[in-house]
Image (cartoon, rainbow, N blue to C red; front, side):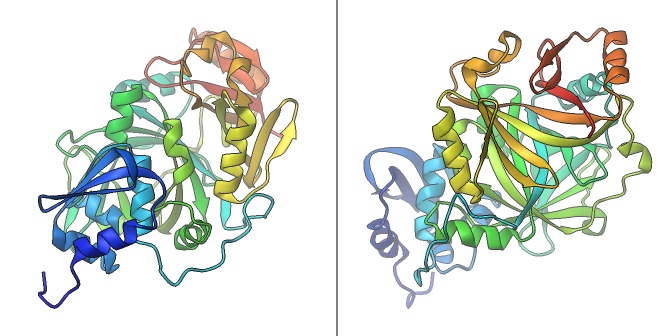
Length: 396
């Protein structure tokens, strides 16, 4: 650390005076400082040099985290909230109007993700459901430039021609805990753990959230590539994506993230867009909440899009006729109510449009999969062990 540089711990304390959220304990090269009131909900550990670089905006907290220079224990929501204060642009700015505004930066529902412990078993189960999966991919990041490191997760995807996809995510490299993914799996087991919104500009969406005073971190760069069995990334044959997290969802036990794809997709053949069950697109993610109106209001404010109320439920339109759909927890069929258990809010499934619903049901019946008619479409009657619940509806 340069002797002429401001003391980063002093700056940490000064910026922390503006923080009104849950207390967070910082361990900065062994010196422990608490920001906020009450008992700490999270503990952040980093060196004084890393703290100085973060405050000086030379590096984002998310980059420090992925590089292993920042560790977080406890409530990630509290950690992100205090981090946003420390990284705030002190020039300020007027907040944008929240719910009720048309947010054209959010283009559509990009993907819904299942966090699972066994990627291969989940792949086999969804193939039984009639989906055709692309090859396995692995996630990695670049830090410093030219040095590529695995993020610790691998995935399979169900792809659709409109750009949407269903993603299955698992820890493939256990020595890299992948932060939130690891904590979520430990807390909830296999579950619907991620909703991704496709943004025209990830940085623009982060700037909007910060102007509104909502805790979020700058977008980070993540790559995905077809890996075979070894970690050997090639950026020229990878999908490069800017990612950030919407803060409202952390308290709900799943992540809602924004994504801007900045480098094309790795090769996917036409066969990967053709599914034996006839699925053509993924129009919605279903969220169940004990406090339905309060939850919908939080998500309206997060995305700056007003919800629509219909048939006792709510939905938020994301573009390309895709939606976040919200229902009361006590309105769920008993066969999937167990997926929510005592969680106040949970993502419980994804919906798919199929060319011929009768043929789709016939395929499921032939494969011994019990189905049930619900307001969200034809549901696989018993939750898919280690995966989740899906709904099939007729394409418009």
